[in-house]
Image 1 (cartoon, rainbow, N blue to C red):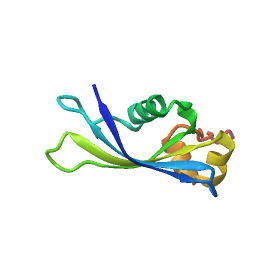
Image 2 (cartoon, one colour; image 1 turned 30 degrees about the horizontal axis):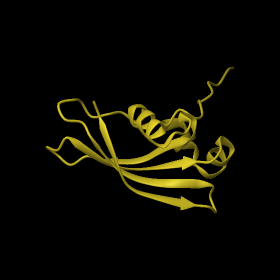
Image 3 (spheres, one colour; image 1 turned 90 degrees about the vertical axis):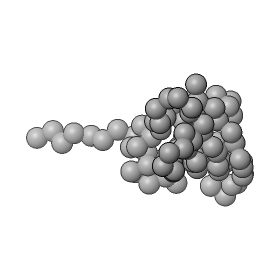
Image 4 (spheres, rainbow, N blue to C red; image 1 turned 30 degrees about the vertical axis):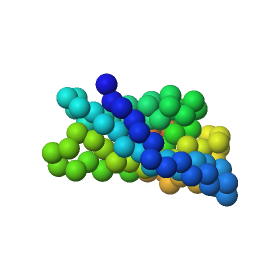
Length: 101
C-alpha cells in the first residue's frame, strides 16, 4: 500500500486551485503511477479525481518514496483553462483526437 503524507497545502485563489506538495512512500511496491497518485490525493482530500492534476514527481535513486507536486482545481473548467494541453493529456483529462482523413 502506498502511504501519502501531505507536506504543504497552499490555496491559490487567483487560479482557483490548491497546490499540494507531498511525499508518497511505497515500501516493497513498484513506483506508483500518476493515476495511482491521483487516486490517493483525491481520496485524502475528498475531491473528485478529475480535479487533480499531478504535475511533478521526483524519486531519488534507491529510495522507496516519491516527492511530488500536484494541483487540485475547484472545478474542471478552471483546470482546462489554466493547464497546458500536455499536462491535461498526461493526466487523462483530455484525449488526443485521431486525424480522420
